[in-house]
Length: 110
Image 1: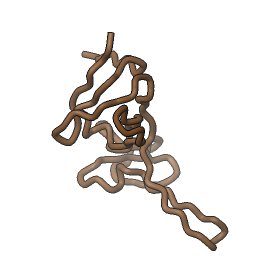
Image 2: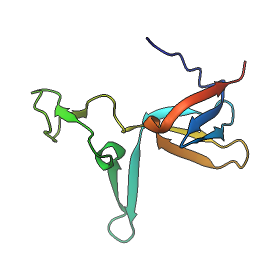
Image 3: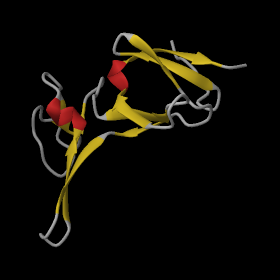
Image 4: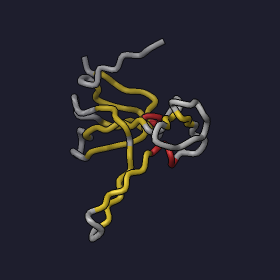
């Protein structure tokens, strides 16, 4: 089974036990990373894949298939908390970001 999500028509997502209003056309999905900026250290920014922060997420080396091996060729096995969603709240204009695993439903305008 597959689901088709027309992100241009989404006006609400259900996540974290409530409906969140979405500005039509602002929803998109991408890799979800947390960035930490360090002033005065050559403007260093460290990125942490969100999937590394969730317990019990499985990953493997995509070349060797070795489980739990983090290196240059590693990848998350589905489902992955690394996939994220972001949108603009239609009520207050704020940008909302969260793991795609938190989203349980969405509303589309026709």
